Image (tube, rainbow, N blue to C red):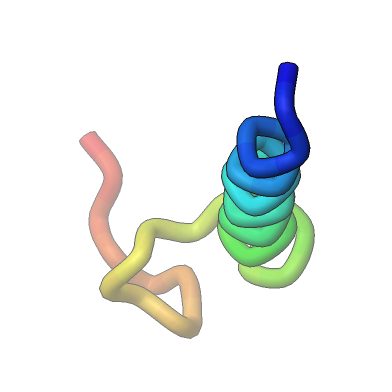
Length: 42
C-alpha cells in the first residue's frame, strides 16, 4: 500500500466513525430526521 492508499483508508475510517458516533451515541439511535425521538417507529 502506498501513502495515498493509507490516507484514503484513514479518511474513510474517520468518516465511518463519525457517522457511527452521530447516529448511535449522540442521538441515541434516533432516526436522521428526528432530533427528539418522537417519530413513530413501526
